Length: 70
Image 1 (cartoon, rainbow, N blue to C red):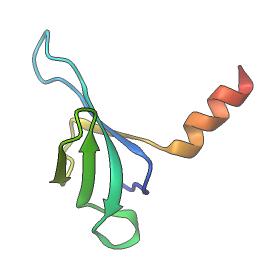
Image 2 (cartoon, rainbow, N blue to C red; image 1 turned 60 degrees about the vertical axis):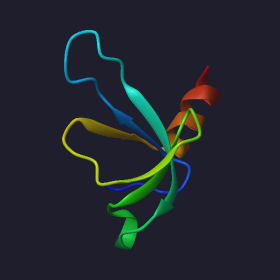
Image 3 (cartoon, rainbow, N blue to C red; image 1 turned 135 degrees about the vertical axis):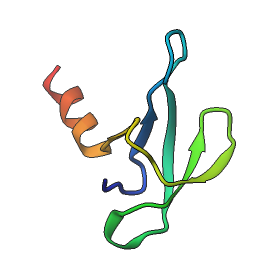
């Protein structure tokens, strides 16, 4: 898993009815984009995360390209 500052981490809900948690990468603590990451959640809380298999990275550049196509 590789992420850059500004990318989003999406942690998918593990049980039915549990919503996904979205956070923004504010600092990459590992080398070459590897975990751990310092992230900021939508409520302002910050944490250090080593994402597991239930996480997905939304790269900021891909998000911009999708918006330009629309």
